[in-house]
Image (cartoon, rainbow, N blue to C red; front, side, top):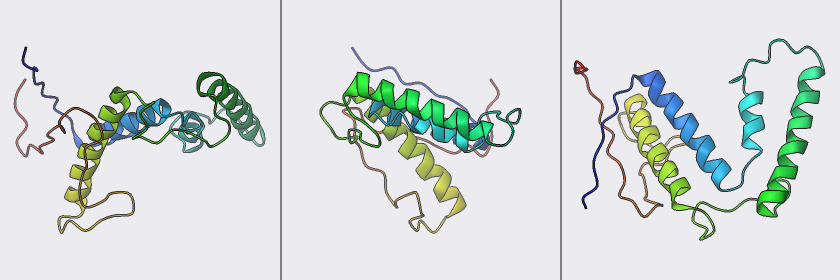
Length: 145
């Protein structure tokens, strides 16, 4: 049986959302549940209805609940987690990390065509999963559906 290949056409904003979603998915997969709170803290969720210390109270309650979930599900506490290369991590989380790297790297190259390493992007992408790295190509001329 051969692996089928799929194509997904995204604009730049959608590609950035894909990178963020894959980052969160792969981090949760290695046990970094606290990243869910970082999504909340970074303004990616609508928290405008909360005022003053209520935002911090909600964040602290969420952290406590996620720390408990992490302890129950992984045995780890606080900031501890597996690394992406741990044999205890499912290959689907490594595949998500690989896809994230490829897309993030392509977006970085567009911003920095000289190919210099950035603060969050190395100058190359490395494979962590058992699957081959995906191909991400920028289309200057979008194709009609």
